[in-house]
Image 1 (cartoon, rainbow, N blue to C red):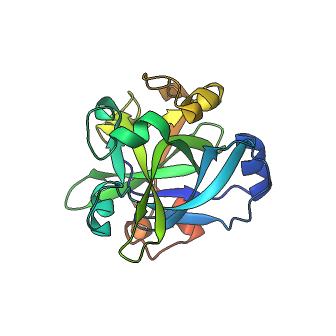
Image 2: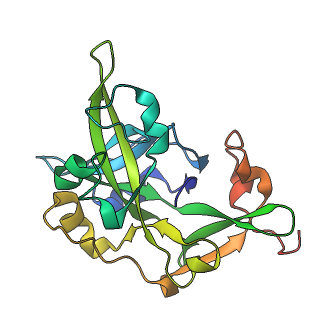
Image 3: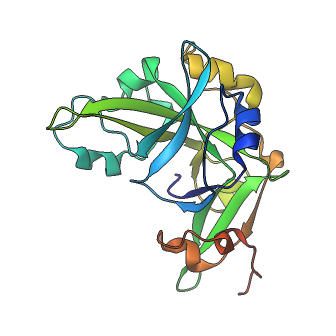
Length: 218
């Protein structure tokens, strides 16, 4: 799954990596949690644009917004079948920019968080879906979810699932929603992970220290 991540690259780097039409005004965040507003990249008639959406997809037919907190992730294997994601999978794909994501592994008496990054520490795009929903006052709310797949050989050491990290060569195809097949993910050998402080376990701790490596026995 993916329940916490970081986006710390400069706006200029993000604009270049995702070929955005403009440079976004984004502050770095080290511990992004579900329910927060997050930047996503989507295709527009003019080109790739960046929008802020609430993390936790609310289907257009939903009666209450609270369902979004149960839909922060979408299993890639069942996107075409699940009513909550079916419409978005057909036509509303996005990329969620990130520099790292976190996963927890159960150890003796506690859960140790780990930071997972690309081997070059550069930003990457996680496959996502977005949706629009009208609240009781008629205001349109845009929300999103992160697509997950079976963990590769590296991440399987921590968890059985992981976000689908899309290789840059596949950005266009994913954003265009032109294929029913999931895009190829970046390989395990292009990724790395290391233990971090349990500060990251509290979403209120949006601190650079969340990304700092610690000793394995700390």
